[in-house]
Amino acid sequence: MDAKQKILNAFNELICEQDFYSVTVRQIVRKAGVSRATFYRHFHDKYDVMNYNFSYLIESSIAHRSFHTMEDLFVLILEKGKEVWHPLLPLFNTEGANNLKDFICEYSYQTAEHLYEYGNLNGSGKKKRTLNAKEHLQLKIFCYGCAGFFEDWIGGKYSLNSVQAAQALYESLPECLRGELISAYSL
Image (cartoon, rainbow, N blue to C red):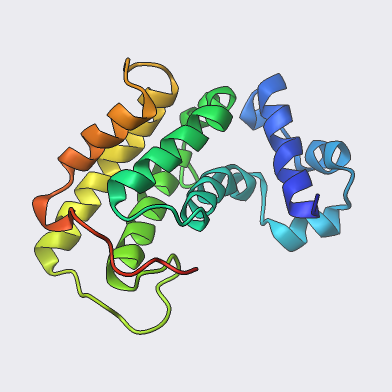
């Protein structure tokens, strides 16, 4: 297991034991068995580790490469999310400039934008499609709504399985953003 994963695992274990605000970098590095220098090589602070939980979920779902539509991707994200995120629910209560909900909204939007326009996660290479202003707005509204849905679904507020939830999300997408995604999304 690499150092970054050790840090993430240690952080997640600590979050299950105590409040986010009482977790320190010192505790994280001690539990992970890494140095402070190693921690700071991978993360800026504990908020960065918190946010990495979500970006790792998305990136690992996209790396799965067995999706052709956003609905397929939603299923992967929700299945992986249910496994890992339930003990991390208290992270949704973070406040201020580095709160998790805002990170999820922005990260989801940027990722979806890159998937639609470039066919990859990081927006590199030749643009294959350009979303117009209306599509950008619709995508932003959708992603911001998804952040609240993700928290509620992980918390058990919906009696839907991952396939049903993914279908409901997909049906909520604006019509112009449904259908096959560009290419086979290489990372």
